Length: 472
Image 1: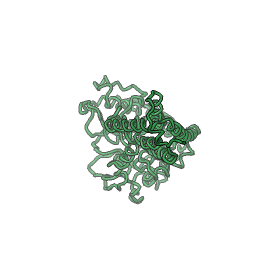
Image 2: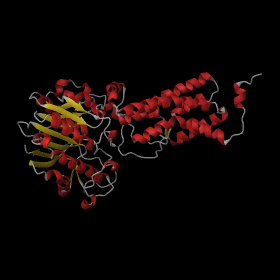
Image 3: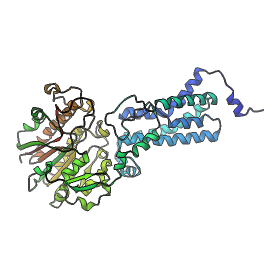
Image 4: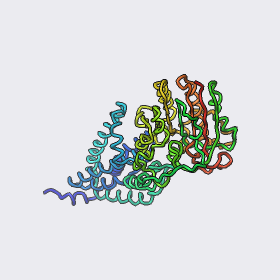
């Protein structure tokens, strides 16, 4: 006579290390793939995703229906786990973003396509492995184990094993234990994310307030490079600014050089609107909801009427602040985003393409258009907070020389800005850059999220601007 599964599984054998080992394996297994992804791409992730507890709970029941339900739940929670990972790489991921990014899939290198296939296969094999391991479980011990982990997880749910200063879109989710479904939902329903779906209010930028665009020569030069530099503030010490600009100031073919600063308290995209369109915006970032005619007076739109070739470039996803949508409305005929360059080196900020990688794109574009009128706009990225050490390859700016804390945000920001300006000087020495007029302006002052003093080193809310031209 066959023993009923309830009788068979409620009998308590002696608890062994082997039983504990396989139970830990069952809990850890669905997390391993995403641990590897988080480590490789430098993204955040809870050590244990508590979503999988429910899948494991169903898997330990020795009944095919419940086991298959457990596998389906594992696959479902893997999707949310994947979304919580992907939203850090491609911010504001939703169905619209997936539709937008899908055509770029075939631009990915072969190794990335192979990696994607391997990830899919790994998830399937993980499901099979979990199903097999579940047969090794005793339901009583497993229920007690899940209950114990659930209690511990509840107590630890707010605790983190690392911090990420100023992290948005899930980049600070370094929890010991937490639900990825909850974190993803919370991220996509945050106030910041809500603003991404709210149409902004647009008004003319105040006449009395300065913008770097007012320094462009008129009539416009035939060749213009316009850079909005991420987090470029203005040092209190004039000598520090001169030191940062030293390589550009010493260019042999420079026709003129002007620099200064002005006050601006807004965000990056507000800084872009300030410079490109003479707009003041507030209360929303859903620029895809703004009709195209609103952008008719933006600089690139005006230049299009005068037969300029207009380009815009930014190292991260075009979905960020709807740039894929409003850049063309503002008059840019060609746009380059992070998804256009899947093979180029990535830096920490939004896992975007490093600015050092993009100078060649600028040089090649001006080479191709050397006989045409061109306006090239570049929104930089690598100097975004938190100014990571690993992205600093140029140590020319000596923070000790200016009495700055050598391991603080202000120092690292200055080094990143100097690194960009030195690379720009190299770019401007190339023959294809002859006759190019250049504007560089900060979007906003650098956010300083550490406890170091700000006022001795930076002018509060001020941004730098630089204007020069290379002789024809």
